[in-house]
Amino acid sequence: MLTCRDVTESATDYMERTLSRRESLQVRLHLLMCGFCRLYIRQLATTRDLLRRLPRSVPPDQDVQSLLGAYRSRTDEDEGERR
Amino acid sequence: VNAVLTQTPPLDADSRPATGGPAGDAILDRLLSGDEAAFSDFVAAHHGSLLRLARTFVANQAAAEEVVQETWLGVVKGLQSFERRSSLKTWIFRILVNRARTRGGRDGRTVNFSALENEGGTDSLAERFSAAGRWIRPPALWREQNPEDLVLRRETAECVEGAIASLPANQRAVISLRDVDGVDAVEVCRLLDISEANQRVLLHRARTKVRSILEQHLART
Image (cartoon, rainbow over all chains, first blue to last red; front, side, top):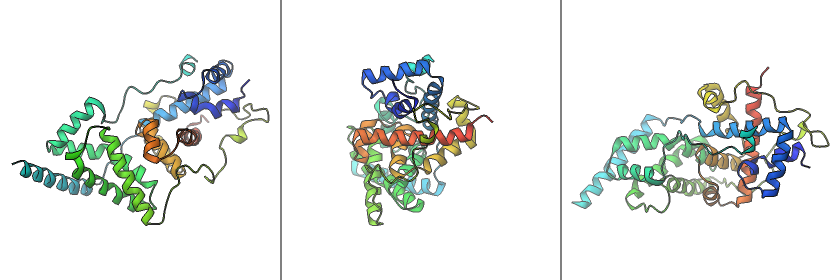
């Protein structure tokens, strides 16, 4: 039988589906019986989903402007070569 | 119960722009045609990810910003010769990693991404179990469970950012790439030059730590 500690240690592998069929089954059996571990796994999944949804940070305008300058001159060069 | 038992599926709704597959091709075509608005959007979409990853290789924020800027210049230069064998996003991350490694090396800072020891602090969960491995201090209920609602609160997003920043560099790199940027495991191993087993351990430790920090932030009192 897996303990709660075992389940938390296998939690990422369980979510990543890298456990063997047998190991995965053992985790599922434990989860059926243990509300705390279900809560734990759900919170870990929420954590992952939250990370995926983090708002983007905005780059400083001057950086974007200088990159745009580089992009513009590069595009112009390529156009020139094509002509 | 079922949601947990059937394992949580990957996210469908992706808040970040796709840069692989057909959508990625469309963006690439616009970038190649000199579409400045597309370029600005593209920079804005990936800037934070690049900065976060760069920061794991170099000594300080200023160096990371320089590496990101260099990376974009490399992207501008290389765009015309980009071969569509990898996704655009992966290609950019690779440019970044190369430059960041070089810069980190020059500054005398080399991160061993495979190192699993000396990460500071013990397992954040260890003291929450009895000797028999049962919960003594079980997970606290959170005020809010829905990630979509959670992420809208600025203080929660800041808490997560702070949690990532508090991780050792190798864990930070893995969780940023995997969970924030949605890069798949195989590609993360290639980028960071680590084994899959290593990648999983680092991801596990990182998620465990971020969950613990979130728990403190969100626990119902």
